[in-house]
Length: 515
Ligand code: GLN
Image 1 (tube, rainbow, N blue to C red):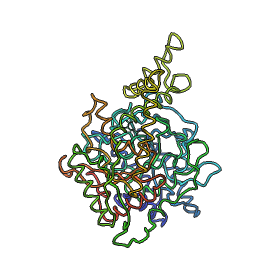
Image 2 (image 1 turned 135 degrees about the horizontal axis):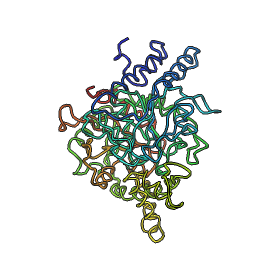
Image 3 (image 1 turned 45 degrees about the horizontal axis):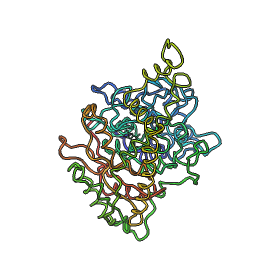
């Protein structure tokens, strides 16, 4: 069987595995070979931080045995890789967890994150795991803080469409690995855009579900009221399969939504009432917030997004103008709340309970100071300082409390908009992927580029990035552009349905960067 015949998405691979046309061992070996080839390239993509080929093949053999016994679920034996923000049981997987930080270099977790367990071996006492094969751990910005993957302590990730550019972040390794075909699907996390923006920059599909849909147990915490896990893959269908398997109530996360598990693949396929084969989106109202189409939006991005919206119209959707008047305020609100929570979450890394321990400190305070100064990167330090400041006595009311009030108003604005439409659409990011180093000296520039992803994060709403075409300007072939779709709470099915309809009619999501 030729190597090329293994490429393709999760759904296609799963079908071939179920039909026993290929084995998981063959599929896994083929991806491991692709990763090894990639690691020999200059400049390397840098997407994988760690791969354990032997264990992956052992998992694949187990998956094949399950299939032979007729015990295979829909994702059994399909390879996956995890953003290195998810802890992986070291004894089981042989994979350390770093969160992209020197602070956790070689940290050996004694357990699996719920998301990892559900996609893999399963959790004791729960429905069986999906039986996917873990290839390894993926690079990301340190503690998921960033939009370019340049904040990783283990080097940047490059964009497979143009290796002089960033893949986006913080789930940059996840997006780049899927785009380059190294793995059919990956997990990511999104606090303020970290699934959607890299998906957009790398031309893959990604979904951040409603806050509470996926358990945060075992996700290294950045900003706990915002952090959500989600999948990145080639298509909405692949994302639906993964999200169904990884989501659901988990008593170990106090903010986990107590709802029965949902089959999002079935929801994605379910026809809309009044729809036809030619017009599968008939009756769907898509709201376009005027604030998401500012004059400053890059023309390439605007053109691609409008092109995708025109396709959605052809499929029967109606576009309506709406307004999210506090869109711009999302930036200061997020960059107060997220650092505030981060400063609290990261206090546990003190060189005693967790993380890097400095050598020969004079006393306990020196141990804290030295350990934290040595192991945290510049962006993480910046956020700890901002967060500590906005929470401090005398500034709490002026910054943190004020930001919390505005956060509620931003969520209320969405509820007003969802009276006029079913989904909201716009760009994911104001530009295509920028050059490596382009924003190195100005963190605020990167913060401003989060403008379109932050509102849904602050409101806790599900958001998706769907490939919507390519820029014309950035060289031959161009760079990917993502369309963002935002739904109301727990409307993941509606999001995936619309994205799937678009992907049935277009092929942007199937294009691949030149190897
Ligand atoms: N770019 C945003 C930040 O730097 C979002 C990161 C994320 O979603 N994890 O905080």
